[in-house]
Image (cartoon, rainbow, N blue to C red; front, side):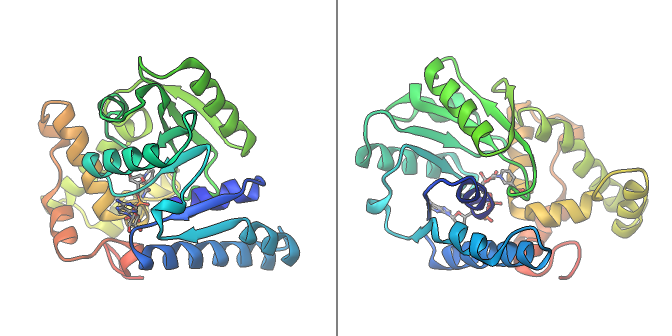
Amino acid sequence: MGAGIAQTLATAGYATQVYDVQPTGLERASNQIRQQLDSAVAKGKLTAEAADKIFSRIDFTDDLQSCLADLFIEAIIERMEDKVALFNQLAELNHSECIFASNTSSLSITALSKQIQHPERVIGLHFFNPAHLMKLVEVISTTDTDPTIADTAWAFIESIGKVPVRCLDTPGFIVNRVARPYYIQAMRLVENGNASTEMIDRIMESAGFKLGPFKLTDLIGQDVNLAVSRSVYEQLGQPERLRPSPLQEQLVEQGKLGRKSGEGFYRY
Ligand SMILES: NC(=O)c1ccc[n+]([C@@H]2O[C@H](COP(=O)([O-])OP(=O)(O)OC[C@H]3O[C@@H](n4cnc5c(N)ncnc54)[C@H](O)[C@@H]3O)[C@@H](O)[C@H]2O)c1
């Protein structure tokens, strides 16, 4: 997600930095952005010069000390303590007005902001996958978010050509809350031997969905989708209908994370 968000920002003209703790994460991000830009050139949507210019606006680094900015959008592992640690480290390094935005799919922005040195500067900016194409961004303020920060974040999202929508800080916000049964009920049918993954995907796509639930979770990443399912399930008081699927747990245990690892419900 970080790569797609960075590509969007650089395309809109912003000087952008991508930070990852893992060199492989940086390499993956750089390759992904380069491939997307090259493909836009091949399709005649961008000139080669414009693509190079966009790419040159992005700096890739594994040095946290060099991360100085007005706005941070974290898209790291879906784990509260990691997000809290990262924002607090960045707060130490940066000026007193920078904004801390989280791309979390399911963690409470309020719970996150309460653990950050500057809760009034924390907001949720939830992009969708693939981030360089999908227009919607959910914007989640908390009762602590400074209204001028919320206005700035809103204007920023519009400035990069996306469509912001205000959401309350409820588990899964809007899209992930509504979409959860799409994945979990489909997995339940397969667990119970009622239908195959291919059959369900084919039927849902022929019913008008862009991607069936199994292809979609392979695109999202099985690890990320499972983390979101667990988080929403716990926050809503463990309702049976949203109990995470053992099928997905098995895939994650086996490292079959979907497109990003070469295999999930399907092989790539
Ligand atoms: N995958 C999706 O479709 C999707 C959509 C919307 C939001 N999100 C959210 O975006 C976030 C990232 O999801 P993703 O699918 O891009 O995950 P991913 O596993 O593909 O990428 C996460 C990257 O973060 C890096 N990372 C982990 N811990 C770090 C740390 N402490 N500091 C810096 N880098 C760190 C990893 O090395 C990895 O490269 C999650 O919060 C997820 O809920 C994901």
